[in-house]
Length: 348
Image (cartoon, rainbow, N blue to C red; front, side, top):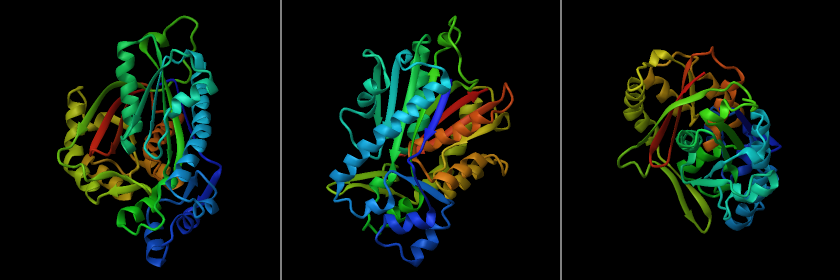
C-alpha cells in the first residue's frame, strides 16, 4: 500500500453533545448506555442543529451526496499525495458506501473534479457495510494480481449520522445512535510491477497484501443490515453479532494463517474494525490476544466512533503511521452484513 488518508467533517462533538441532538428520546437511561459505549467524541456530516430540521429521507440523502463528495475528494487527494501518485496515474478506483445512495456513484462524480482519466475503471461497492474497508483492500489486491503494472484506489465514505432514525426507539437504533460517526477514507495501492517501474516513486513504505479470505456465515442474514423504506435507512443490528464472532472467527483466522504457514503468534499487528466494545472483547477472546493488541482499534472507536467501512482504514492509517519492524506480519479483520468477515494478511 503506497498511501492512505482519513478525513473528517469539521463538526466534532463530545458523546454527550451528540446523543442529545441526534435523537428525540435521549432520556437518562439511554444517556447512561451511550456514555458506556467506548465513544468519547464523533464527527457529524452536518452541524447538530441541522438534524432536527431535516424533512425526511430525500433531504438527508441530498445532504449525503453534497457532503460525501467534498469529504471524499479530500480523502482521495490526500491519499494520492501520500502515495506520490497523480490522479491521472490511477487505473481503477473502487468506491464504497452504505449510508447514502447516489447514481452516478461517488467516484464517477469525482472523476473530473480530481483529474482521473476518462478510461479509469470504476468498481462501486454497495451493501458491504462495516466489512467494506477490508473487502475493498482485498479486491484491490485481487485486481492488481491480474494487472501488476497498474495503480488502484479505494474510496470509502460513510455519513452514518444521516441515517439515524430520530423516533425509532428500538435497541438497534439506540446502539447505532451511540456508536456511529462520519468520515471518508482512501487507500492507494500499486501492483508489484508498478512499484518497481523506473522513475516511479514508491510513496510511503506501507504494508504489502499477501493473501485474502472472504467468509459468508450461513443463516445469519438477520444479524446486520438495513430496512430501506420511505423514512430511509433503518438499522438492523442483532445482539448475535458478538455471538457469531465467538462461534466462527477464531477458527477462520487460525485456518487462514495455517494455510500460509503461520500461527497467531506470528502476527504482531492487528488491524481490526472497531464494531463496538462487546465485539472487540469477542475478538480478543477468540484469538487470545494480549491486552494491548487492539489498542489502535479502541483508540479509533473512542476518538471517532464506529465509522462503518472507514473504521478499519482509520486503524490501518494508525499502524502505517507507526509501522512495526520490517518483516512483521499483520492481519486486517472486519465483519459486516451477510453476516460475513474479510481477512487480509499483511507484511511490512
